[in-house]
Image 1 (cartoon, one colour):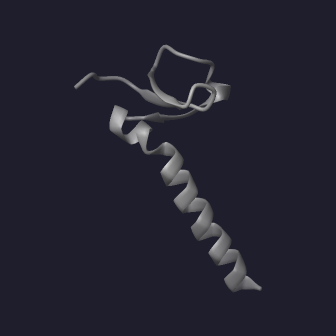
Image 2 (tube, helix red, strand yellow; image 1 turned 45 degrees about the vertical axis):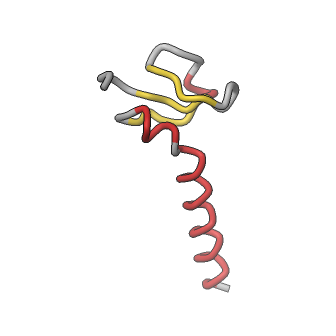
Image 3 (cartoon, one colour; image 1 turned 90 degrees about the vertical axis):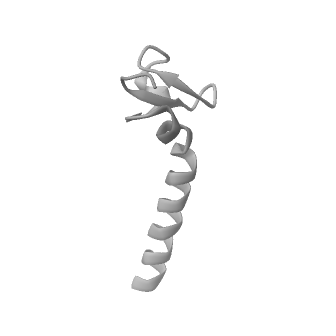
Length: 58
């Protein structure tokens, strides 16, 4: 396994190592390539949970 930070590039829709696109176009950093690969799903899950919490407040 490669050490270092990993990012998910929103421009290219792929996982990148520390050297890659500018951070403004990426999600992260993540500790592993596998964690970075799940960035979009993790964000979607969190957004859904937050939306449901907002509905409970109404």
